[in-house]
Length: 124
Image 1 (tube, rainbow, N blue to C red):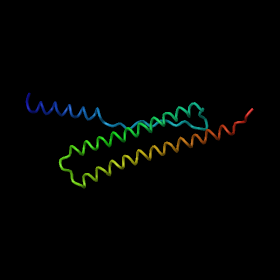
Image 2 (cartoon, rainbow, N blue to C red; image 1 turned 60 degrees about the vertical axis):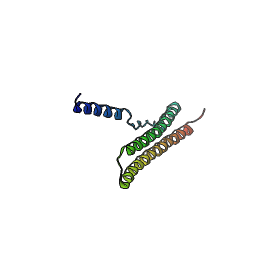
Image 3 (spheres, helix red, strand yellow; image 1 turned 90 degrees about the vertical axis):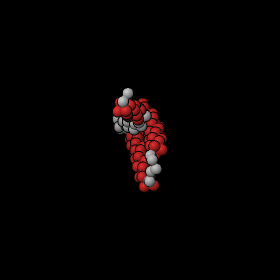
């Protein structure tokens, strides 16, 4: 096998391995409209939101692990490079946590809308 062929095979293996262990941000669940949703729809949304939040936490652990591995592969990185990478990772963490908080607040708004609807319904 020629040197070029060995390099090509190694590159393909390395590239395909990195894709296999890539961290994927989870899909955001849909929140039903509390003014029209049933209790069962809101309970299902609650479960989906809890699963999403756990998946976001798993994603964050994954990107943190990938970043540690990437830094370990660097050859004598400068303090500036390390700081830049840390800043980027922190921005990803902040954005994901802000998204979780926003989703939680949006769900709570729909719960309040549902509760208002239920409390307005005349009781027999």
